[in-house]
Image (cartoon, rainbow, N blue to C red):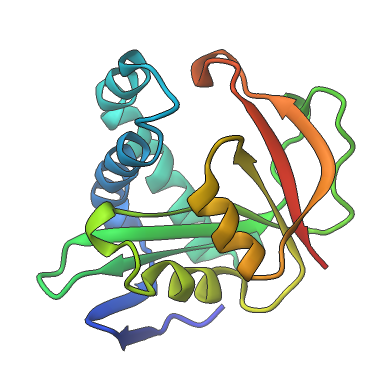
Length: 184
């Protein structure tokens, strides 16, 4: 996948590189807190804040793999005019399905692993640009927590629909229900 940057609507969107891992992880933790404040207990947010070093290392390893192997997927970051990471997206081949508790894997190969924007970027079009960078118009699937109407509307606008499969998240996500969306 080519390394390109595009400046749109005051944001620069570019492929994430290993040097971005710290900012990516900090933004990830902040986005989880903002996105799931209505769904998750405070302990969830404190746990992620306490795991920032671990998340940074995990993101660094993934970004290293992605930047050395085009088949490993791609991660994208959105930077505001000051150069701060305010959104990100990652997509690639299906991840290990063991956690899926017997739900059959999607027949679609491309998974949107995650996409988040911070609250100040909501409604700016940054999420759409990150989705377009990460998966374009390709068939893809993703998992979404129940009771996340803003995200669900966004994905439905982009051609995704529930495929009928749902499950409970693991212990670290407080066994919250989620469901799969696909775009064929």
